[in-house]
Length: 178
Image (tube, rainbow, N blue to C red; front, side, top):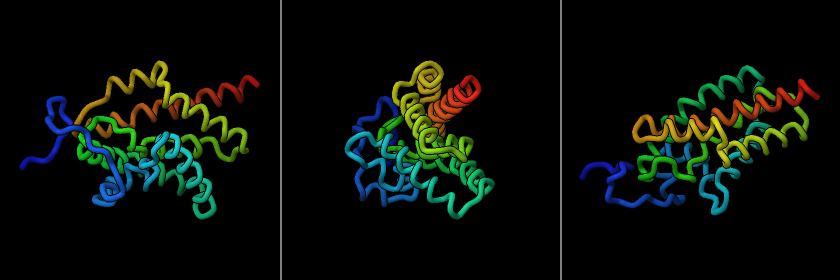
């Protein structure tokens, strides 16, 4: 029997992930944010909160350069994990996949830090707004790069990369103008 795909003509319905699915493959564990993506409500927000907490904890053990290396490594890791997991869930962009939020919010925090709680909260709110509403460039990236196979994981990640860039742009403009 051939492996399941998430092609448009796939006769199998999308799969709903659970803990057993998450633990069945390392890519699933990563893509589902070590469980954050299994949240019954707002998994993307849960993933972003988890990213924020993890970042704050990692700052105690890693310097800025090491965090930068972690951020850079999280992108190809996410591309792979999101591609594998989306294929196995038979969906081009399942809401349970939250590694895109995690890796991209780490980018925001890495560039923003050191910053106080208010700036971090503003970054969180802006990032979530851009990621959920997908205005302008985020919507374009989401529509343009969605796909299956290797393109699937990239498509899952790219709109969040654009959201991270836009978040940082708004924060930079805010700091410059005020």
